[in-house]
Amino acid sequence: DAGVIQSPRHEVTEMGQEVTLRCKPISGHNSLFWYRQTMMRGLELLIYFNNNVPIDDSGMPEDRFSAKMPNASFSTLKIQPSEPRDSAVYFCASSFGTGAAEQYFGPGTRLTVT
Amino acid sequence: DQQVKQNSPSLSVQEGRISILNCDYTNSMFDYFLWYKKYPAEGPTFLISISSIKDKNEDGRFTVFLNKSAKHLSLHIVPSQPGDSAVYFCAVTNFGNEKLTFGTGTRLTIIP
Image (cartoon, rainbow over all chains, first blue to last red; front, side):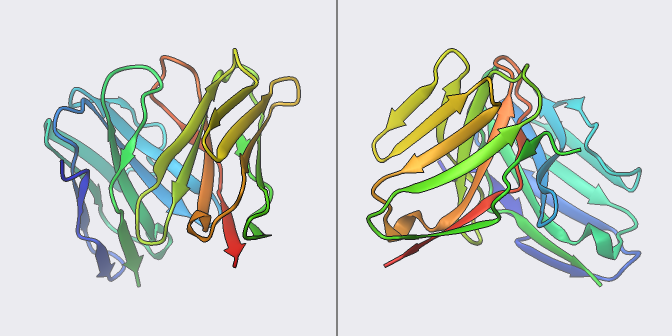
């Protein structure tokens, strides 16, 4: 299996622009997670989906952030408008089953907002 | 409010010696604990876990210890190898809950 695929790997954009991050989970996995990594806060869960349905979005920082999962093999995280403080590494992860299942992470997208 | 704290941002250990990484959590309701390892430019990968019914779990060179009364978790690596140089995150959850809460990470450097 190819593992979790994220694109782009790097994104540099100007403040105010829209940014869309993409994720393809491992085939057969039914849960998908979006995380943000910063030096100060470590890995923060932004939102997670189970069977394509958002379950917990309490970590989404503001209305500028939105996430969708239109089908089992694709999810997007959108930031509009972007701000310099959104600069971070964004990870997507997927897992199979319920309970404290092991999560498989993608390589991340490094976002820089200037 | 950080529910999970890794108070050492970095740690350097001589190759062959023991590495001890620490993690403290605030909520005694958590009952499942995990360690993830992260290399540069890669996503974190699962390393080892422990449930609250145990106080120790071993997997090769890696052992996780849980002290429930102190709400403290530690990861021991022995002997340490250069390939162990990475950032280590602890994570906590409740069994049956998919949501993990991660610490801020500890960067381990193994000195040859």
